[in-house]
Image (tube, rainbow over the protein chains, first blue to last red):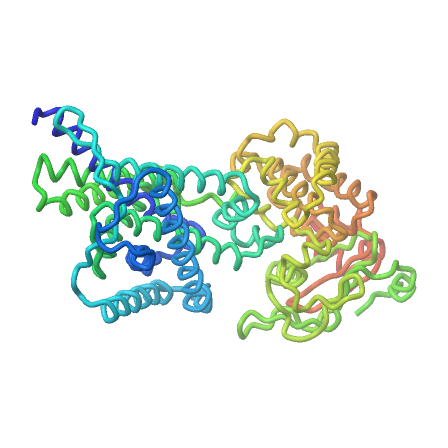
Length: 309
Length: 254
């Protein structure tokens, strides 16, 4: 491989990882933006999402890579699996908020955050104890279509991953900017009491924010399985921590920041792995995080402490 | 304790839109409102005077349902609203202009105004109310696409009032409308409050600038450490010696 082909290949890989981290980072950043809570259950909502999608495909008769689909049937199955998974993880996130966290709202200190860690452990252990510790071969109906650009390879699954991520992020952007509920979310993030005073039902905004963030985590879970062809009870930690880093890097609470941070972390991971050493990936990622936070504590796109006018 | 002419004035007042009967509000252990009674007649301007920590802001929060009273009744348009959530009160026509404005700083002026109409679905009427707000505050119209956080204090006060009017309220609750404004702006703000009142909106106003407030109000209450110590027509309060000493003294000296 020529050096430009290696670079191109790593950029393709990095953008794929990055799109997945970005989807996952959005959930962290949206919840933080609204109630200043870091939701560690998000790690494992993502993991549960990858399992739900796998079970769905098994129910439809796909085990491992036994049935390969093309064209419209492929799109149909993927869209169906994606929608059902997102709906399920969305409801899971909403339930966690409603019954696990709402009672703790307004409690100062670390109690709500610690609770999210506890909830995360519950999800982790439920999956571990019911499905076992082994790595699962993922049900995947995607054909191994690939395009060669020199020696670099672009596969259908990468195109699918980018497509899904872009559609979801554009939809989210439109939702937050243009719809009434989106405006209510912005208002709540900027000044919760003022939002309440113009008649926004803040409890509803919070539960919908959890729903949307968790649905995006579910989508990231589906993408993870289809991209890597496996899932396991443990996948939440590495991906979740990197996505969380992406949210902080971009400026926690900032939606475009989470997207940018996700893509950057993905590129750092793949390029760092190529040009420095795979083993050093985490060191590189977290060193960059520390440096950014030292010189720009609000993250790349974050603002200084919100001015309460 | 009502002052001398209060009984007559009471009976001459218009039918009540908002009433507090023996309301007690607590913050944890702290007894903030101690059995207070207020009454805002339909179409009136009523002002609430009081020093720091007298319970003025708590009164506002109790009206809006941001804090709940421990006992006593808050009645609005003939119905008890004690247990209603804030959103429902806004829907029924109570709109706040909060202390320090509390605009959404990273939304545009237009978006802030539209948030004021959040509970409404009558799109056409909302548009015509926007025009009404622009007529009251021509300056707002020049700033529609600007982020609210970048406006001056006076402009923010206008947007905050405009935002409240977008709810098409029956009762406008204003917390310190003159705070932090230049004297020229203060006068303008009070003129506009009167104009809004003439268009049929009742106004309940907490204000440090007693002189200004009493000059446009119909009725007033004086709150001290959570208790109503004095109430009466705005004129009788202005003539009252205690009010003059405590709240109007400075103005006289100038």
